[in-house]
Length: 294
Image 1 (cartoon, rainbow, N blue to C red):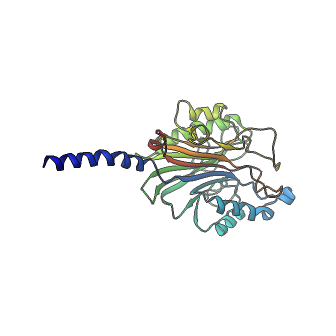
Image 2: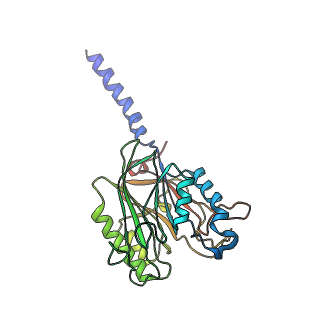
Image 3: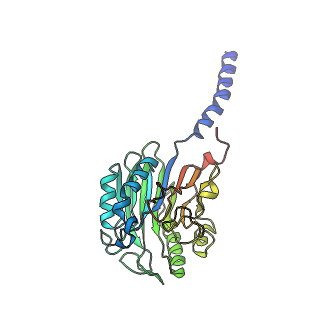
């Protein structure tokens, strides 16, 4: 009997590290933020109909589980829904909350995540109605969703946004509003990811209002693998831009770690899919990111 007990204890000691290691080999999920550039006649050869196939082909290849886009006009949204049938499109336009005007939608991979609830609000002192915030030049919105990963039940609050390109007070006001909204609406046990074109580097006071004191963290800085790709995310239709900053960000809250980060400066024989480069992060549970990975 004593020998049997000793053998069982030894088996448990041997199996414990294996079980522990298994918890640190999670299935990462891929998130992406991508300003697609609105469809405007002034872009000429770079107008949406001439690059639609480049853009949606890139999305299908990279296969994000969660995609936040900005500057999406109604016609572009219809094209994206047609070209990416594996995704559920969430969020309305900034002019009426339905389809009118630019949108910052979340596209959620149907096979990977279940949508528990979703909605949008305006970045302004009157978030429930179409409105202009502070010194913003345009109406700005945030789209949100409470998600559950089908594979393991991971709870996630995902938000996508597009901050004003001119109004510094609007960007700071947007940051403070989002901080308050996340604190008030994050459900118990939920991890948080905020995607967007913030029109600002991480050093600006607006983003610091989210990062310090820490509510969210920069995915590039957290990446377990060396982060790769561009440090300038607005390319202005230049394949190799020489001036600018990272203004498109993936920010994550407690509960999430980052396996890898890539700001993808891809062109197609000199042609670009958008005037921004996409930012991609593969996310994992934070508990696994805290220890060496096998």
